[in-house]
Length: 234
Image (tube, rainbow, N blue to C red):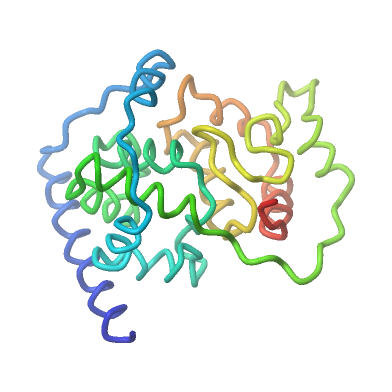
């Protein structure tokens, strides 16, 4: 197992170097943003995914090196993918493939290069595999700050912040193209929220997340990260 993970890490390092070099020389074309109509058409024509083939890709393409043996990240440097909807994973990998998702860091460069080796069927198979996996149940629930629970359930009308649960589900299970947040790596959650807030991540349709994160405080983002990390998908 150690040899596999080491080889995977080396492969990802080479992938990053190749992607960074291409970006430096201006080879990456500017991606076309999604519209709801364009996504709806894409979603209606998604290839049927095969979870068993997706599992093989997850292992053979060394996705497991960062995202864990069963899609549960072993470290704070990568997100857990287990439990995400087929639609979310498919769209995210297509966004990396087109460079629409590119936060301008090494992690994005690795994912862009990795995604560009995949066919649409590969992506559908991976999406089916991750959707079939689950985040392990947490042994004890955390005590939730009432203000954070209110933000999750009701949002904040005065700041025009939509309830997190309205898109991500009452238990953080995710819906359609919104990711599952239950059990997510808190450090990844915080990085993602800041990427939206600071305009470094722009692959959200109609800039929905960018708008919702704009007025969140750093303390609220940290608390939301811990809240969702404590949940198990139900």
